[in-house]
Length: 300
Image 1 (cartoon, rainbow, N blue to C red):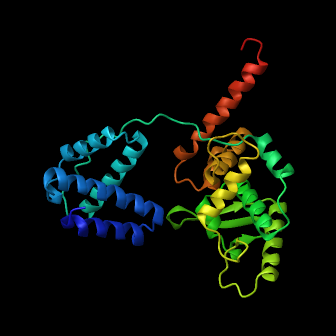
Image 2: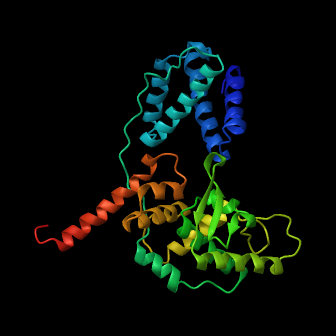
Image 3: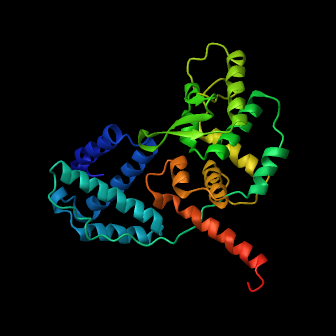
């Protein structure tokens, strides 16, 4: 990235980090997109000033991205990064007008989220055996919690013991943008988690942190560990190409909507900021209805 733009980008990144309180993953995405854009301007247009950047410069960059076979979804993310960046620059008075006002995002084909069937989840819960070890106990519970709550990977890893309310059957999680939400859990799962906490206090001594889940070394779980556990166990029951914690989140939401759950309730459970993000699960419900119709209706 051109050094002349470093202060502008860094002040924006600090704004995302300290005022918007975005996750580290999101911040890295913004930083990467902006670095790529300003590196392109440095190589092609000799680092124009911030106020001299035109929509034409942006379109040239996007055209180069397309030539590199960047997907429409990734292009949209880069456009969104630039829009947010220039909106911030207008807010702080660095530019009077954003060059992004005439930039149109490419259309992205809707893709239904992958999810595990109810029968396959039943198989996982009832017939897959976990070793009678601390790892086995941890792995089984984190799978149950993903499917039982639809929480994100980062939310599960960050749960503290104090966030579990066994008496009321609920767990508090810290979601995107540091927004808290409370998710109900079944009485059985709440009791299992309470037993896990009790076992942890006797299994490990002198723990210096209050994370709910820890590995066999008594350390907090890290993303790759959890991802590998989910992938390995889903591979036992499904042939889906994607086998990740997010697939279990999709599975939670899809099974709720398939069984008649109110979409607004699902939105709150998932921690979505708008109903539009939740509505994709209705497509899966419609697909199920179509399947029922084809199998049951005489004229189908």
